[in-house]
View 1 (spheres, rainbow, N blue to C red):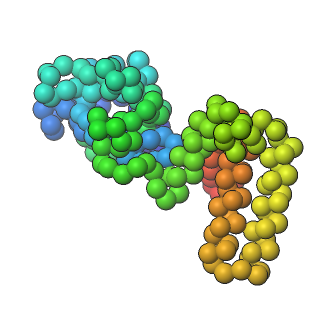
View 2 (cartoon, rainbow, N blue to C red):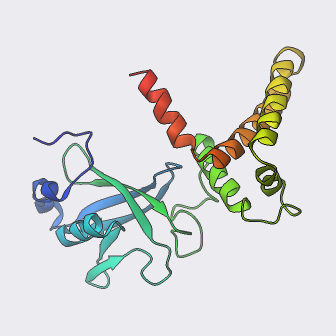
Length: 210
């Protein structure tokens, strides 16, 4: 019996509930970093096997009657992170990293919106910081901070931390939100400079609370 918390492997394909939907399973694709739902597609055995072997999300196109790798024309492929079946084995949750907009309308998700919101925006912010790192320092504050190096970034984190502490005792709720936002932004820049991200931090927090 497979571990329900373990990602799906090729050995698990035949154990899924293929007979419930005429050989197709709905596959919900979720951004591995932001947790935003990107799209819904369908997989047959061959599409699932192709996804696992290639590392890129592949569906069975019901309109074309063939396998279809997401992004095969646009280049906006979905790099596979993991696949988890639901409790009945008749639906799949696919986590992946998108290379560009997932929706053919040019948005990150087929379900509308401008990108991940809520707590998922922190991962989206990390991507924005990574993109800005390639800009000219005279055109981007983020690029300038990264060019100045870790000591300067650390100095800014110290300043923002003190400002947040002062806001906690001297300013209202909105003032605290402003200073907390500044601190989290500079912390995200430090993560980019030192080569780690929010996923690493949340994984460490989860370890501590197991």
